[in-house]
Length: 254
Image (cartoon, rainbow, N blue to C red; front, side, top):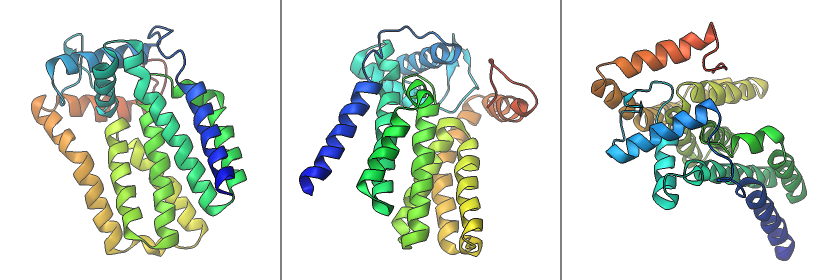
């Protein structure tokens, strides 16, 4: 049985590596978002600035900084290259596959966990997103982790799952803003309605989780607001969040 377990694990790891990593540096940064994200990360990295995103020296209010931070790590390892910009996006893809595998395995069977993860891994849009220097890979991984850990908390009543949910939701907010809370929160809330367990959210544990989430997410927003005299806050929340409800920007919506 142990050998069978290892076979599924290593097969999934090998397929993930084969589909997500080869050729990351073969194609140039070509789409609008990739180019600007990578250049913004490069400028911040060279200034050793972890607070204010810039593009060509001007303030960039499009997204929070988490994907820039991961690109810092990629640049440190691989230099200012396509590999450096995209590497940790692919790592996020591998992590998403494996938390999905272990979650499904826990509540179903190893075979179903493998099939579920394989279907996800071979989905065209999954491979497309997790091979680009954009914030979405980090948001997807963190939202997936938030939903899974929330489910584990409500099933097992172990507080550490809730704290982990709060941390990943807070980090998701640093990846792409309040949409991280909206997406994961909506999924969790709808499931609680379906299970007729909505009243369980009215507890001190949920309040503490909310505080943890804010402690993770809010400090950077305060710092960038202070450093830019409120310009980043206005640009991000008013233009790039509320504004996208009325019209697309950069060729797409939120």
